[in-house]
Length: 259
Ligand SMILES: C[S@@+](CC[C@H](N)C(=O)[O-])C[C@H]1O[C@@H](n2cnc3c(N)ncnc32)[C@H](O)[C@@H]1O
Image (tube, rainbow, N blue to C red; front, top):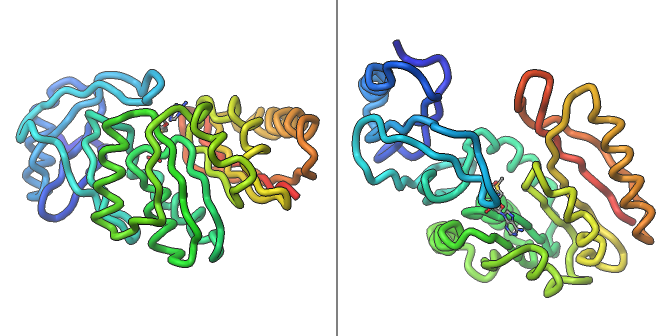
């Protein structure tokens, strides 16, 4: 049986498939490889995403033990190995939604930048962007981000920064027009920093959160209320539903306007 839900990352030349934890994974993997001739390896998820770096454990069920691929999405080629860094191809539509908002001349700070999918798409989609400092704490992800900057010819626009957002953001105080915060489990803890990174005339913050559909309005109201108390900007916001996360629970993006 081919499993009902699995992900494929990569290109026509080389791809990998990722299946859920299941019984008889070998049979499922063989079916997937027969169906998709470009799939060279099948990985099975063994854990949820965990820890600071949001990685998960996988087991190689069948195929090539080298699971590095060049994934094609939107206008970009992204080199990655899911065993070494976070990456989700399911978020490509959301990345495009954000990239389409960027105007020429903006400095866009990408916190929690991973292998660079937001940063690189923005640089390709809006060549007039000023610069895109991209902070990431996982050295393996920053290594891929640097390779992806070259692969996509966006040197000088995307600035890879290895380190903790808490320590590296102060280098960008008062310089940013827009801040992207794709760490849904914890990004809200860093919201205070964003007020310092924005230019004095304000800007936009895209804050990702995980919340139940039932509570999202109330929780966001509280969150933004607390932020408003600590900043001189006038804050307005809209909630955008991104993807399902668990039954009744979704990943949302709170698009925050600070003026
Ligand atoms: C959910 S992933 C998103 C990665 C990337 N933006 C993407 O969309 O593929 C969050 C990333 O934030 C990084 N991270 C977590 N805490 C961090 C911190 N305090 N400073 C910098 N990066 C951090 C993790 O290593 C991980 O790569």
